[in-house]
Image 1 (cartoon, rainbow, N blue to C red):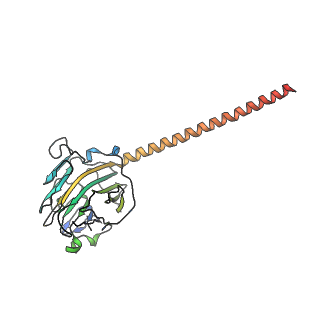
Image 2 (cartoon, rainbow, N blue to C red; image 1 turned 180 degrees about the horizontal axis):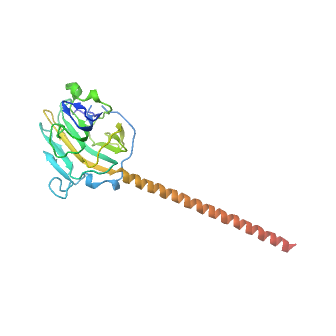
Image 3 (cartoon, rainbow, N blue to C red; image 1 turned 60 degrees about the vertical axis):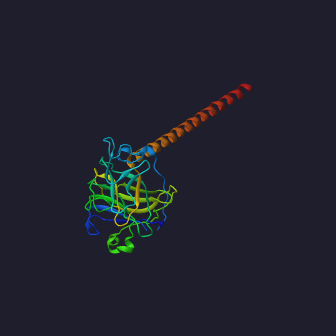
Length: 302
């Protein structure tokens, strides 16, 4: 089995790709050789916003009114993953959040797996992760609608560089990365962080639980009230596209807790300093009293 690699590309609002006018900003991840970057740590589970997250056991997904997510197309829920598309030609599938996101600063961690029987350059098409105004609209962009408003992060396994170079978005590329993810023994992880109009993409594709740099875009403004989603599509070529989890973290809440922890530490240091000063002052007073007592004792002796 051949291992594909991921190349990340960033596009500005209103760019044309493969004949489609796409409203909003989107990030294209094309699969093709691995590069390294800086390591980071995973966020703690206490900051996961479950109303925006898709995690096991996927209870009621797509069928229960209590679920926060909807299924679209041929997406299939299993105990271990949500299979957006199987390794069969001409399939589409998606999951979409029912809850619009009103967090200003957030981080999305995605766990997924791409695998199939196709040989090198004979697999596709890939999957995408979304934050868009529209939801539950099937189309030709990795199973989503052609004209979307918002952000798209694309993992494209189709070998555009070999088969369709002029249509793969290279003329408008402003950033990117590559990493092997297809038909590997471990899951792939993608981190999408948005804070203070800065979009940061990081990856963990080596199974080491270490984030490595992928791409960064500054000056990007994303409106509130958009929906998270994930979609996939196959055409003449195919692969299994399995979504394992999407975890959203509230960065503002994390920062607040960190600031409180920092303040508590500062308060402890201040209190300790005051105690030390108090002990020192008592020591000085004690020495003075002891000195006077010794002086009086000498006078009595003589």
